[in-house]
Image 1 (cartoon, rainbow, N blue to C red):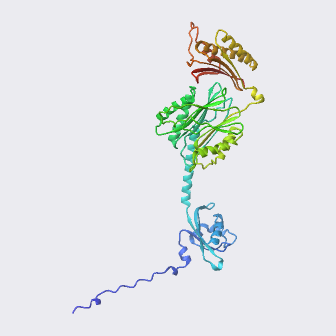
Image 2 (cartoon, rainbow, N blue to C red):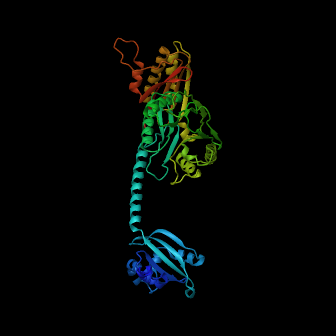
Image 3 (cartoon, rainbow, N blue to C red):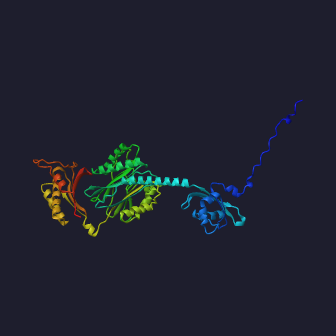
Length: 514
């Protein structure tokens, strides 16, 4: 008869007893932990317990304390105010990467601990993050070095020293944006054109990085080359537009190019998608240069035009990039209006005005975009300073008497300005040659203009013909062709340009003794 089924089944062995958490003391649980643990009691932060890791890290510091229950290391970590907050609120608090002098770095969490007899307690749990903190510091140091290199590159592409024209006072400020190592494309320049005229330019290549900086550097170099041709502002932008497309079709840049002529007291400018020039009059009124403006450089297919805005003595002009006024969530016109308000009350030297505008618009070292500002002042001259700036002009009607009248006029004006006999004679000779050249090759109306500044004598002749003279070698038997060569030989510099309306101006300069 088969055995009962249950007689052959093996009975399971009884499971061993598993200790419950309550079977362990706090010391047994916390002691082996690799993290640093301390339990402190009361508002005096008396140390009731520290685990092995804590004792190993801070034992030497604690033995030097004034009392056995003192905690100088917690004070050094700046935790005492945090522990007070935990005691008051009963809520945990955490601080990251606190560093002990001469030791490591710790991320510390303070937890409320029940201690009825001791007036409450705090359990301090500190994780050693020294390796992480040191790696982060090395990364930050590397980023700082890269940023310093990038900013050095950017600044090296800007003018190291601004040219200072006789009739204007100029200052500029550039502030790199962000904290990364990407250079920007903001740039500016001041270019003396001769005959007292000055070109002012500011631009912004969209985007950041080495490519934007490279395009910026090439555009700035091109502007200086085109400026030497003494072209109207819109023609300069036309040339830049074509060049920008050839340099990098993916990069777009905005630009304003303006020319100041002291004889006219105004700025002639052209804009390629850039923000408007602002002019502050002597009474604090701010004017905005409006149209004309065209699309940014590099877009092609657009004929730029020039506009004008008055810049009389006592007024200031400000050229700037969008980093100064553009803010996230705000319309750009609001930013321009804010700049107008700041400029209205900004007085002082050009560099002072630059700094005040930067501060007024809230630009700080943490600003996330590059900022370039160019401030141009046309000062009012009085007293002894005014005596150094004079203009004299003579309309030339043509005929055989024109040349003698021009020589007599130049001689009288230069004598009244009390120049040395040598400079007087050279000035009369230059005026005579320029007038003779205009009488022979030009057309009415003709004008002789003499201008003196504190640093130079300028002689200029304008007429109605747009053919520009060039210096050439005259042969012995030639009866003409020597005038420009003579002027180029005796003067410090000379040049010519076309004037609005189809005429030209030919000029020369003499540097005055210091």
